[in-house]
Every structure is written in structure tokens, then in C-alpha cells.
Length: 81
Image (cartoon, rainbow, N blue to C red; front, side, top):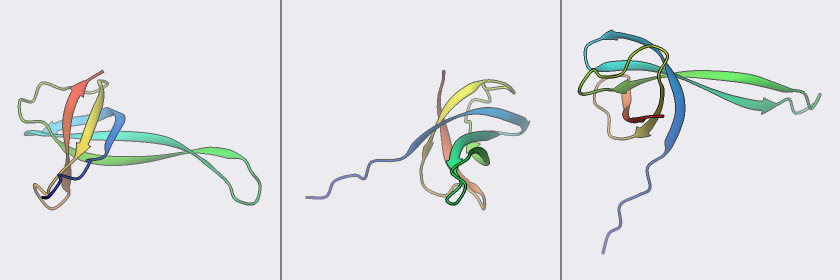
């Protein structure tokens, strides 16, 4: 019996929707410097699949990891928050 693996989900906001069926989602997280113990922000941009093109710049969304859809697209927009 095989079980399907749990897929990662991340919250972020859309910074670009200029492509067809693709949006760029910026995810910000806090890191702590190992020596100085100061916290700082690190942001990462993910290209995510948006099949209906219903999401626009500024929307807070949840993205889910999936199979590769193109060279850089490995995430899919699940829903708007």
C-alpha cells in the first residue's frame, strides 16, 4: 500500500501577474543570525501556476508544492486568504 506524501504549503503575496497562467509569489520569513542572534527578514520568490488567472498583484495566497510544470514552476496557487 502506497501513501501520497504530504505536500508543502506556504503563505505569501503576489508581486507579479504579467505572465499567462503564472504568478510570482513572494514569501518572507524570519531568520536568526547564528553569531549575533539578531533576527532579519529573508524573502524568496516562487513562480506558481494559476490556471484561471484570477489572482492579481497584492493578493495574499497559499501555494502548494507539486510536480514540475515548466523550467521554474513547481508550485500551484491553492486559494486566496
